Length: 253
Image (cartoon, rainbow, N blue to C red):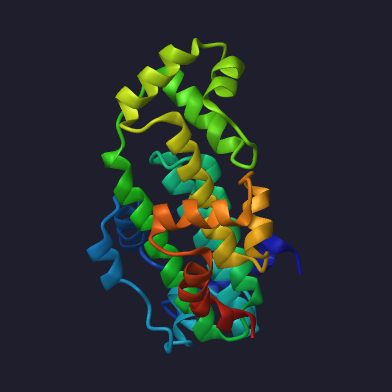
């Protein structure tokens, strides 16, 4: 059967059975709350992890005859759409797509529908929280933006303020003064914070040891990594992994 013929047959069947996909206004309102950073509204719309039959309803559309695979496909579609919408609304592209990849990878390890739905809820809240933080960010000068972008893309390097200024061909003293004036923190502290943020994700979603993660992000030693990590998060890497990876471990069992 040709695709066009199959399409017409499916549309006819849905019309006869009065089936339709989720209304545009409802779907738009849902995603609009995410991109607007409206945590309270999104929390009210989260799915019940025990409602595993939800995605079999006609309005969601069947993407696979296998119920578990159907939920997986819907997860990927949702992640892709949310990521694109958040990027369009100002979320850093690399941050958004990396976050999406991490959640899809975790979903791929899940063995049960309840786990996938719970992970989907977590992803929605994570993106919403990051969008809620956007208005708090100031509009920076082009020099500071370039510095931030370079730091973000080179978090694994042992980067110093002098090296950054040389790379961007900006006077070090001028860049340091401007950076602190606009961000409220020095370049070295900003670099350290970005490294720790990235390390948090590795502690959550990987099995690398603390020393391997510290070395990967250019810390002089594991003790130095632990010291910096605790200063930023209030926890040691071990405490952080124990607290935040426990909820993730079940997905791979």
